[in-house]
Length: 245
Image (cartoon, rainbow, N blue to C red; front, side):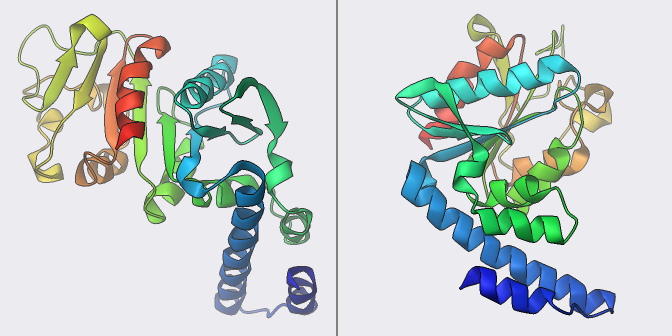
């Protein structure tokens, strides 16, 4: 039904931009429904699916995405990246992400001359997402789609300074023994003190994380989290807490 429907619509697309945008949005909605159904059949309910997003260049970013995905899997969740998905009982065996995206959905995006189907659909077939903001790349697009679709996000950075030498932000909770810190601001973005420069905040220092991401994450706390870790391995504890909510 879906392939026939899309073929009919695509036969003659309107020329005006607004109508074309509405049709593309409608087709994307249908594509998400079909992708979600196939994912449920192959890997289980959406509540068990968690995405790992980040940057692919430089190369260590790709390795970090896979390592975070492995941590997610070890917590008993199905982990998804832009390239593959992994099941909890076989954490090191990757399956091509194409297996849970119907072929006619990929053909539709190809016909539309769009190669971003994975970015467009993946944030909408998961219940949570973990995003590495250490280096800013296209993960901002993935975060935006997660935020737009009310998907809770754990946004983290890897940095040496997880706390200041003095005068930390009062909302910065530091776990020295576990080598990570977390923003616990539950009062709203207007109470964020990092941008004043009078207190230390690892997330606003050198504008590591875009202000729009910080604002939205604070509004959604504690469902969504801002975390700074000294090493990627230090993410395990805050990740476990994030997935447990």
